[in-house]
Length: 350
Image (cartoon, rainbow, N blue to C red; front, side):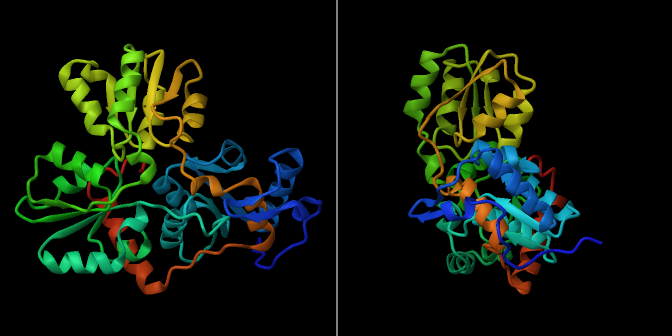
């Protein structure tokens, strides 16, 4: 039987001395062969598995045991035989892994890696909103904190948000949170007028705007569009299709997992991608003959990029930073996530 190491360990190389803690995260270590060998040694020593989100740096994706979106990775964490989960993503994702795997040790390489979308609504905010609509069903995007999930009736992903809302009695009010663009997409598709939408956003996705998308489409009229529903340009993409600027069949509103599925099926030579730029790495690996280009090449999440090679090495060596969710919150949050799975196909995640 393999035991799990919980104490800090001494690195077998000089890499530890190079790690520097700066305002943007841990730096000083390059992702070379020495780093990779030390990471793999520590993973084995800790009985750990490394999970990396699609928006992570390429070096982090390459060293990971599993790469995917937040929900797929939380499931991988629950199914993994290893006792320690090293979650290379932002904090709410590591929390989700802990919620679904309460008996396991969950580490995030830098606990400061937050999320502007998850931070756009607090538990106190949601309690107040619920008090204003006491009979409403609360639907929360999986990109939320454990506290918010615990106050939620049903969680959803971007790929099953429509299914989840359509499963609710049409006479019941719905409180949809926290992403206003995903909420607008759900309202548009379902035609539901008793859905109230929280005015939250991911600052990276919100910054991918319609003007940029229109300019890119005009420059590449034969390209297909992959647009994440969190993007500020999602409505513009549908408008361009409605106006005939882009054939409707070339506009794909997709989750990150949906983008990867579509990448292997597309016949297009060029695809314009509206989401965080880290996604391009996996798309290009999935379909190397397709020219994937970002709608906005500045759409990089600074929190995702805080999970550096130095941060990962530090976390494995020191057993830092461990993620905790209190038992009562985890129990309530787990219930809302399980209900999400019961209501429609949760698809590929966010």
